[in-house]
Image (cartoon, rainbow, N blue to C red; front, side, top):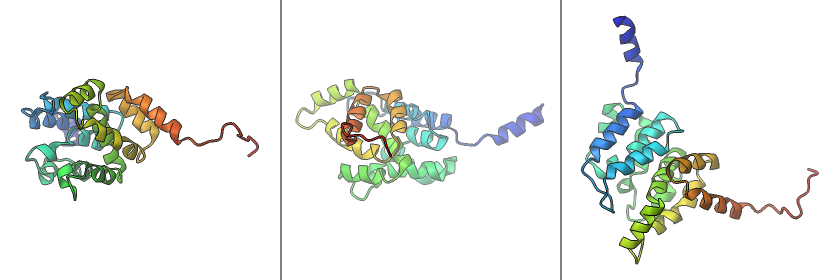
Length: 200
């Protein structure tokens, strides 16, 4: 019995999605967001939004802000057992590691060059764009609400992945954005339905 148990144990990878979730909660425990809410709620929501994807992407979702907002380095993550791929995604979505951290749109274009990083950033953007959050941010910064930059980033990020992947994420974290996505797809569809010919 104990033999069987030990082989099962050794087959388990060291750093799981659950480990990432716990680490995210602990690492961001005392932090607050722009609206003075517990920051860990945001990182957990982003990780949860990626439940339909593989473990590396989900791990990167939970830890997407760990290099931005905590002293934990890439090497520390690798030492804990985080895969190179998950660490690469985390690094790519970390604003302060970009060539020009103050150029938000340039950062978004850089993230969109990588499919996996774009998925994580779509989940991050969607959670930051929840209606009640948008309203609160607009009230706090009436001159330049941060939500404008989130809206401008979406088409760039969406172009990097499949539409079905976007729908899965939005369905979990921010269904309100599905309507905007459909409007965007309608605009991009330049099929001439009036003069459609069926004899291909």
